[in-house]
Image (cartoon, rainbow, N blue to C red; front, top):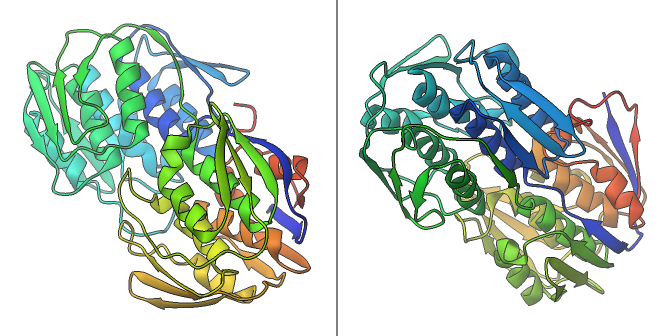
Length: 427
């Protein structure tokens, strides 16, 4: 099993390029099932979750071609409208194919989502929304089965709480439904907006994506298209924090600064210099320890839950006490115990972590519990005294493309130990 070995204390310096967004690429790949024509997607990151989605598309009968970050999917004939457990057990995004499959074929059988153990990820909102669109749903033996032999029909869908994958799933189902669908309390994340942009290129009629009310007028058929995935805002935020915690001087390039504005505002208040030096790039400089600044996770455009662990890592070496409040997932503080092994002073009270900043962290043997926890431990190791070994970095391989190589290129003393062939590295 692969590990990262990191010797801390080196300020990062240079350029860190951001890859395409995993969380945008996954629904985009699922959307390819909606047409029998080829869809070409650019800037697809080479991460494990993408490889899993590719395997799923191929299982349904789609043909997938990969070359230099570009993936072309041709789902001319779908042989199986199913996402089996053995294929998707490591990926929580499996539910994204539920809407496209039932819209395209009239039926779908999808294994309940798996992935990181950071709390409940209920699929009930997807199910309720598809029922409103006319699908008959049954749940048994770990699977969701949806049927709409006469096709889906437009409806008013109002989510009880904001759900990104639920919004994306309904978007994809509604584009081929008869009539108009209106989604209220829709997720406003950039990934939702990016998916709508792809679907509109394919011939869909979607208005309002990126706002809380989205309108979709169903069409009879979608066509092929070409589309480039947006930059990964979570990777961008991770790199911005890596520069700050190492007290370095780094340009984070190929990003969209407005997508990480909730983070960079906090960082500026904490004492880091974060400037948009040119279009699509942020220069980050930080000398000395930051000032403690409280943070609460929220749906976009608020502070992303996927950056909470990384921000907490930075606050472990801040002047003062930081209150970190998690409102999205109920079990997303598992990294705190591992940070404590490195000398961090963190107390958990329900959905709030109280972080008392320390002068320094110390290298230790730690292990990752989920994707973003992995990143927080890497960040902490960059500033810790001595050597840190991070076990179970397969979690990180699910969402970060060659992160150890990127960090090493800007001066980090990091290496992968016991490296084996990485699934998805060739995507």
